[in-house]
Length: 183
Image (tube, rainbow, N blue to C red):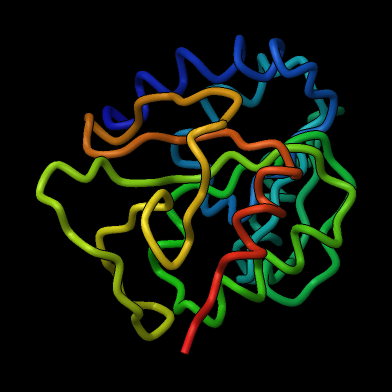
């Protein structure tokens, strides 16, 4: 929870600035930090995760909130619901290049305007490397093979200063994905 303090302070104003009416949070996990924000969000919140039991539990615990809903969803395969912004925090650095490609393609087919996702601060000049989905790696979306532009809408420091959440408009995701090549 302490590692999300800055994010929790910045997110409501960021959503307002982007005029977000519907937020898709996928994967939403157990709402460890989001539950502190959930009651005060001004937008509709749609949490989604790949684990059915987790989603069932979230519906029991938070389904009584008028502006919140939860569904089982695989971001690499399931049709993404309409939203103004998709929050995909602390996820992509656990996915293989192939699964990131599937996710990006899926996102580009969706009716979602913005993507907010994690990229590590590259203070040690690491390079991105492929992994088996489920593993972990340092992850910089500005480096190959991702090549995201610095033309992002905003960034929020997250995780105690070792990463940022960046927001890109879909058109910037499309440009980056056009250059995304995996062997």
